[in-house]
Image 1 (cartoon, rainbow, N blue to C red):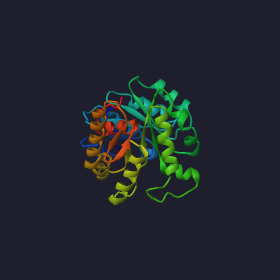
Image 2 (tube, rainbow, N blue to C red; image 1 turned 90 degrees about the vertical axis):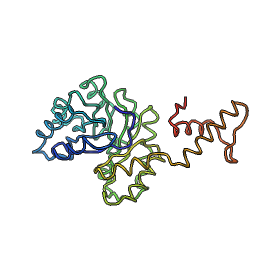
Image 3 (cartoon, rainbow, N blue to C red; image 1 turned 90 degrees about the horizontal axis):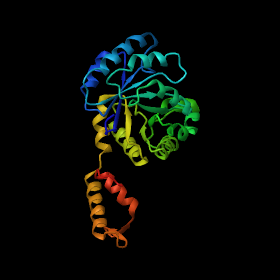
Length: 272
């Protein structure tokens, strides 16, 4: 799995043209979908096409969304896609840590698992799920989550902020990353920017996508601005100059070690 995790593009496994296009995109992670995005009568061909795609050269990390733990098709999915080129599995509808353990035993040791939180039960159990040794991150599945709560998703940027924040906290508590929900309105770039900006502020490292047109917007929004980079450089320089001797001020305001850690991350410096 690559180090850049800003964009996670879902690609239906039964749509060969979409697979071909995805393999040539400047996206961080491709998620070949075998679950909700594939009709029941297309599951077999989807597995075959995804297995073939995984064997091809690609700059992006390649994950596969399988069926959920306990589903009769999960074993078929895993048997089909456990080939060279598979970086990880996105496991949907996770509600307990044992789901991760079962799948982890089926995978090769270097194959990552990202768990999707898509229900109230999954959210309550998110910390336990995140602590599973075989799991590298959590992803928020907002549409199924809204259905489970009996509410209608409205696309408002601040929507479901409690659930989103809880997933970030659960992941961080276990030293894992978190990926934000999809933004379904492909034509609404301003809304995508606003929601992605909030995702970054909440602590998500990336965002799930449904269309290639969203990639550039998400990438640019997750990158630090020129002002953020400038301020981070000032903070690092101020701490280096102080050399541990007393408090540090930047632009007339006192800053403490946590700000230094954040500034180093902005600049791509190991905060430790």
